[in-house]
Amino acid sequence: LIRAVAQTYKPCSVGVSIPSPAEYSLAVGNAGHRVVEIFGPSRFVVPDPQTAERNGIVFDAAVLSNPGYPTSRLLPKATLLRYLDACAWVVVDERSIELTLGGESMAPLVRDHRNLVVIRSLCESYAIPGIPISYCIAHPETIRQIGRFFDSSSVSMFAEVIAELAMEELGYLEKTREYLD
Image (cartoon, rainbow, N blue to C red):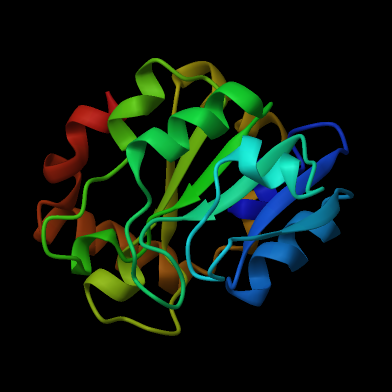
């Protein structure tokens, strides 16, 4: 889904917080963007955009994780708000947010920030590795924009069936309905 979001926008420089999963840089690079690594002062803290710029790191968009990879540190809301002010678009990967103890999701911010896309996954929460079932939460206009460029034909029938069953049987959509409406 990160690639689907990235290919929705014109090529630009995209900041990717480091360390991060390799797929962040691959997805952004494969969509035609230039990857800029965002290193924090202690390597495990995502700096705000102004601090990054003072250190010579300049970017137009960003891919972040909440919780952070591999430390599981939560992304401070204030830091994300600075990214939303400074960037054309921001993707926040929250595939592990449900595994944190009281971790705050950034999904409610999509109502007021059209440049925010939050990505979630059923794979980690429900321990179904190997079946890529992910979805994104964004402003309805942003979802329509992504839908114009996203080709979901790469989703296997098996993953589709499992996702449908998980959402029906586990009431998963009911838990996130407030973000999806």
